[in-house]
Amino acid sequence: MDPMDIVGKSKEDASLPKATMTKIIKEMLPADVRVARDAQDLLIECCVEFINLISSESNEVCNKEDKRTIAPEHVLKALKVLGFGEYVEEVYAAYEQHKYETMQDSQRSVKMNSGAEMTEEEAAAEQQRMFAEARARMNGGVSVPQPDQLETQQQTSLQS
Image (cartoon, rainbow, N blue to C red; front, side, top):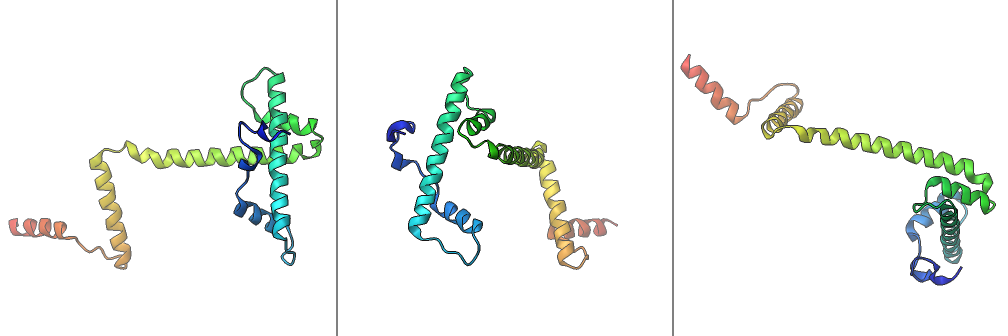
């Protein structure tokens, strides 16, 4: 592969986060095995080259289908074409897990943002209710009135 094949960047510009890759390498090996820094660098370069290879082949598969966007199916087909067919099932399972986790995250995000539909007054009332609950928990379940509540209680008792 020509160094300029990577979207107008030199080969040296394309890399993976070294700390993350080192962590992955260490997690894959027994605790008593150490990896020399040169070996780590070589493994990282191999990973970059593998990604470039898969990306390039996925792009060719995509172009053959007259598509403009590389889809997961193109990546899976590229793995088969390049002789990595034995990994397709595992890669597909990882892809499905990623889709599931992403869907869960987006559903949580929607739930969190649904509170934004409250009016300012409703939000303030909800905040005060939550503060009161927190105060009650801090005081062992005894509700301690706040200064504004004391004022209201005093005015009510004076009127009686």
